[in-house]
Amino acid sequence: MTHITDAPGAPHATILGIGSYRPSRVIPNSEVVEAIDSSDEWIQQRSGIKQRRWATPEETVTLMSVESSRIAMERAGVEPEQIDAVIVATVSHMFQTPAVATMIAHELGTNRPAAFDISAACAGFCHGVALASDMIRGGSSKHVLVIGVERLSDLTDVGDRGTAFIFADGAGAAVVGPSDEPGIGPVVWGSDGEQFDLIRQKEDWRDVLQQERPVMPHLVMQGNPVFRWASYEMAKIAQATLDRSGITVDDLDVFVPHQANMRIIDAMARAMKLPPHVKIARDIAEQGNTSAASIPLALDRMVEEGEAKSGDTALLIAFGAGLAYAAQVVKVP
Image (tube, rainbow, N blue to C red):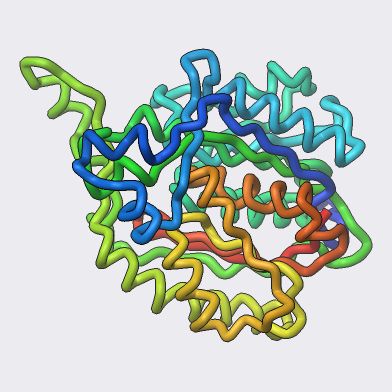
């Protein structure tokens, strides 16, 4: 019998460095209220959002990804040629093919790594971290660049009262590498396809192109059912993640949920009975909901502002269109 040699993997994986890019355009609530017949007070009560970032035409998915990745690699002490794989989580790269990851890898000066996109909406970054951890422990890669990036302003109907004030743009990146100690816990992930229609692109591209005056498809969301599902289901997923990681809420230092809505974040924290010492990411107030980019953006802000310290234990958890979800416990780089 012929024996196939297996690639030796690292005993564990960890996040070595993170970086972020926030677009230059700051859009306060006052700029979006007129089109949806609303008010700053109503938006803050419904979502906790005070302002959001929207990209300029020059701030492309590629540019934001490259800039955040350079910061992450510098902080990780990893050179471009050391990157073995690039995983990009996004729903707003407007080409069906090729993957934007290949262009980003080239722009960064990497040495022809594996490069691919994943589409798991707001849960995409957590999916990417899970894949990177498995790739490193499995021996197929040593350093994996994981990027969450969105230009949701391209897919936002500014006249839609349910979504116009929510979605935003930005990018966050993490370099995942080998470690002698566990730095990324087991992922708890899954999907609930029965809720497929709760968050989705409204129109099929083919239907759009048949219109007399085609316009970009938009994202639509059924806010109340999403709130109920997330508030109930995500606390159970969070507990399952802690159980699989062998820790309790008392062992957490940082809680970084997807920045979907401040009310959902608060509801999850109450349901989980988070202790007062656990710092909670609330980046949505200043950034808006950036889908796949929201968790790295939020974690990076916490590090920069001193709320999260290197070595802290953090729970990352996200849900999004599908409905897809993923969560893992990580050590803050």
